[in-house]
Image (cartoon, rainbow, N blue to C red; front, side, top):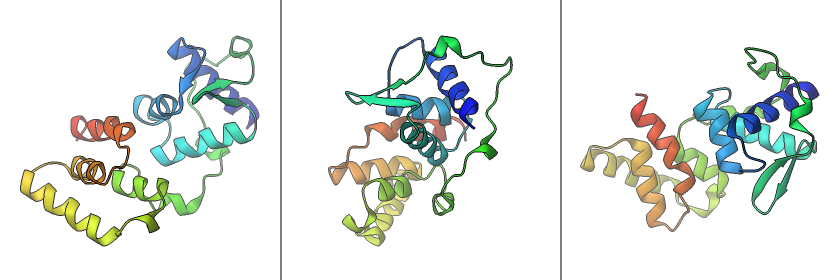
Length: 160
């Protein structure tokens, strides 16, 4: 598992050409750009890499805790997700459901889930827009930072 984590991290940083990345950029590369992990799995991978000291979080950015140039990534590399244990409760969340991701991230007890869900459905129908876009509008009105979910909504729109 250790070499798999190093390969993934090295691949992402070599691909980006940067020494550090915002967590959201790293997350989006894993899930949206490369389609290696679902958004939930990508988040778990990052947390695992931080927990096992493969990544450092410095000033709201992630940096590898090893020399990425010392890692020889195999040609045609694709990660084996079976090497990682992702929390089963998160698999219940639909991987592209922004509403559920935000509820989980910002502690769903803080919000009236039923009321928010009704508002999302109402706006979806009224404006004839995607549910994830309506979710962004509803949560934005509730002063929730939604900018990190815009690319996820765009991905849904352009890949449907």
